[in-house]
Image 1 (cartoon, rainbow, N blue to C red):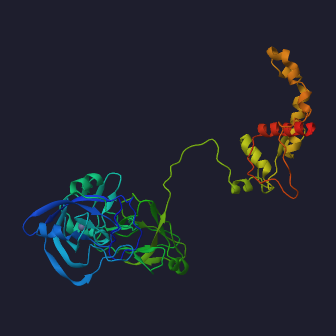
Image 2 (cartoon, rainbow, N blue to C red):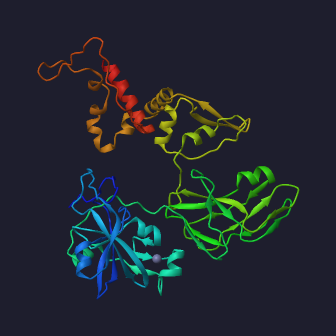
Image 3 (cartoon, rainbow, N blue to C red):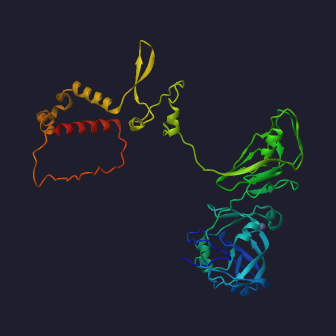
Length: 445
Ligand SMILES: [Zn+2]
């Protein structure tokens, strides 16, 4: 079911395949508490609470300084708004407590929606597979948490049933692509971006150290990070330091599951010691997307263009010998930039040479050999010898007489060509068969 509710300023497309996270919250109204399932939706641009819900549970609302309209995707004002009030209410999610601030709106299907502002403030980690939400941001560990930072999400269907809600489609959810940073030392500096477009974040030293000429050192940063799932972070040299002071970084790859302190290994390629002061920018942190793939052993790797060009492309290179399938052999034949042939070993000279051939000559040689070497009686099993004439040359080499009404006439138009279709790669055996078929039919006319 699709509901064209759009959030404030939201022009994104609505997506009803959205997998929303529902989580149990407890709101402390002025007279009583209420436990309800709230939706977490990164597609919502605001945090919302339902107007009637507020009055029912004595959740205090205050007049907003500015009245804000809520628009639908087609830019008509929504029946949800305008938003005239905000609500401030103590809220518990597991052991996580905060003073939550909501925009009060007439929500048709939900009581509470945690949108981007709430997500940004608390940066909770989501384990979608396990339906687990963990509050691990510095703000949360410092201010919000009493005990365990983890709460369990409620299966959406269940949550909806509990709340007697129907689906509420908001804009497409975007996974959090930010790198989480935890200070291990309160004095440590959070990495900063040199400019808005900079690829990396500058990492700061959390101690002073001298990097000896032609040597390297390990420098602490006082932080640990968690790159977003599907990414990794790497430590790269800062170009200024590399150029001016010949400081490279013997870098580390930081996997998204490494939780230890980030340490930088500056290497001094110059001839003078280099002094790193506490809080100096020492390297940059670059986060890149990765494909999470597994390794497994195979007998043979698929040939790539590059690999094939490398093979035998220079005369000085040693020949690499590998076993390939008949199908691949057939493919080799068709490549204009490769030479295919038969390896011949000369006992006299004690060396191997490649006698290059083209496919038709080779197949002709082979089929000729087979026919000469083997008599019909040898090829046909003994029990079928009484039908030997069926296998003999004769009828099949002649064109049968024309039968009107049975044979179909194909009228060829002048200037028309044959349709060009995909050519399929054939194995050596298939090619051999095709070759003899063509030859046979050529003979028949
Ligand atoms: Zn928090």
